[in-house]
Length: 327
Image 1 (cartoon, helix red, strand yellow):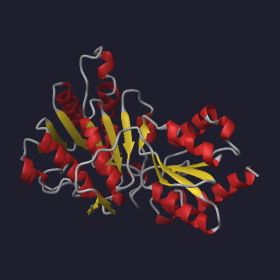
Image 2 (tube, one colour; image 1 turned 90 degrees about the horizontal axis):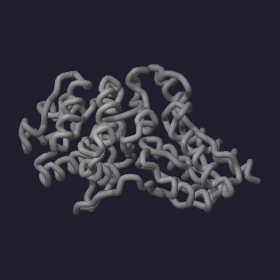
Image 3 (cartoon, one colour; image 1 turned 120 degrees about the horizontal axis):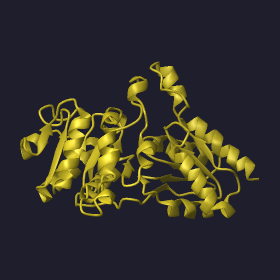
Image 4 (cartoon, one colour; image 1 turned 45 degrees about the vertical axis):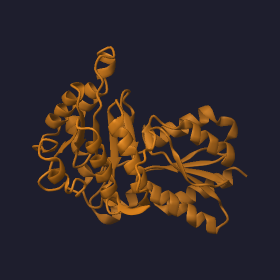
């Protein structure tokens, strides 16, 4: 095992795959000469050259379209967005081209492209740069959506995403790029579409993804001090979603709280709540509760950002509520 930072795990995934397959290339704003806005691609220009590590203009719609066209013609591009908030400008290419190409061409054209970059809040970035995109993109048939919470999962899932023949949207977080974890020295892959039980428990299931996993795990540790044994599940893949792991956990705990940073309406947590009452209704001893971001644009003031976001206290309160309701 070795210790790596989140950004290094992503870099290793891309570099290992580029050494394996010369069809893979990386493009995006500042990925080459500047070594990446968050230093994820540091050193890759020196190793792979400017034909495979490509700086683009500030034109997300344009370079996303180049990525889609390249994928349709046999290459395997990785398209980096400096933030998924900027990718709004590229949604026509992602939603109307990449997602639909296999279906509209009758299977003649696949689109093996990875769109990656950070999502959600990262401090005082204001309303336009603090939005959460998993549920937006997860709504689109033809797209696979991954949202990672730690360096180990980031490397294994990014390698799987790069090898996948469908368009994959890979969500990271600016505030996690410096996170450190142990990962194997040897190559490994993590299958797309498989959630992970990060903490086993018997009393309640807490489900989350991306950086809200830190909130969920922190809440679980505090609950343990009060004798409440929480199971914590990291979705990792938003679409396709691993409903089976969620159902199996509910069979054991009979209670569920879902934690996510996104707005509550038509969110990932709303899908989970609906699906669990459909697939596992007989195992529920209490209604599923959701802890989400506030139903408002994200403010700039730090105290208002903190109020907007889920926190361990809110999760603990929800868990105690489902425990009370189940009695």
